[in-house]
Image 1 (spheres, rainbow over the protein chains, first blue to last red):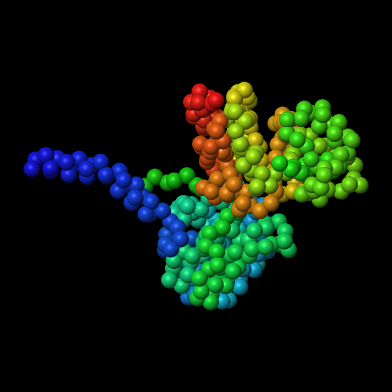
Image 2 (tube, rainbow over the protein chains, first blue to last red):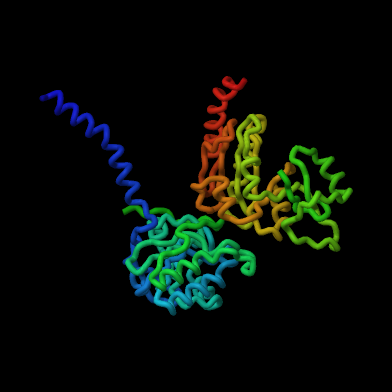
Length: 209
Length: 198
C-alpha cells in the first residue's frame, strides 16, 4: 500500500511541470478568447480616459495597436482610419492603443498622438497604454497589429490590415475590412489570422509591484 | 534561383561572384533573361552607386537562400528605418565576422523597394561589401518562409544549422552575447552532421 502511495506521489510530482506548462499555455491569449485587461482605463488623445470595454460596440470591438513613428503604420494609417471610422458607424467599437515607450520613440509621445489623431481623422479613441501592460497582456509584438472581437467578446481575427502596406491600389486581400464587415453582419470572418511586417513595439520596462 | 538585382541595367547576379566581376557586369549593362526589377528606378538619371550588391528575394526563394552550404547560416531581417535593427547591427556584424569561417551571414532588408539607396548607404557605412538581399513579394509568405512562429516584428534573426534546419529564432534587438550563443549552439550541432556525412 505504501509503495502504491509513493508511486502516486511520484507520478503527481513528475507530472506537475506538465500541468504547469499546460496552465501557462491555457493563459496565452489567442483566438476564441476575450480581451485581457479590458477594464483598464487609458488616456485618449482627446483627454478623457477610455477602456477597451468602454469602447466596445454592440456588434464587436476592434483593438488595434498602432503608434506614430512606424513607417508601416504611416503607410496604413489612412486605411486604419477608414476601416475604423466605418466600423464605428456599423456598431463595431474601435480603440487604437499605443503601447510604445516614448522614451525610445519621441514621435510616439502624447502630444504627437493628439496631432496624429486629428490629422489622420481617427473618429475613435487613440489611447496611451501608459505602462505597456495592455500590450504585454495581448502579446502584441509590432505595429500595426489588429485584434477583432465579435459581439460575444471573443477574438475572431488577429493580424494585418491587408496584404500591401505601400501600394493601396495593389491590395489583393483586405483582411481586416472583410473581418469587420463579417462581425458587423454577425457572420464568421473569412480569414482568422494573418501576418505582415511591422515595427517592434518597445514596451516600457515592467514595473515592480 | 532567379534573382532580381536592384540596379538599373543589371538585374541578375549570381551569388559568389567577386566584387570586380560584379562591377564589370554592371558596367556592361547586362539585362537578365526575362527577370524584372522589383524597383522602379529611372533609367535616364545619373548612374547611382550599385554597391554593395542588393538582390531581390521572393518568399519562394527563401528555402534556397537559407539552405545549408556546409556551415551555419545566420539570417537577419532588418530595415533602415528600424531603430532596434540599426542598434543591433554592429554587434551582428562583429559576431558574424568573428565566425566568418563557419558562418554565412544573410542580411535581408525589408525596406520598401524605393529605399534601396538608403539600404546601400547604411550597409556601406557599416563596411558591408558582400551581397545582401531585399525582400520582395507579400509579407505573410516571406514571414512564414523564414519561420511560421515569426510574428513579423523587426528585427528578426534566424540561425540555420549545417543541415539547413532552423535551430534558433528570435524577434527584437540582440546583443553580441545572444548572437554568439546562438551561433555556438548551431556550430555545436554541426559536428555530428559532419561525422555522419558520406
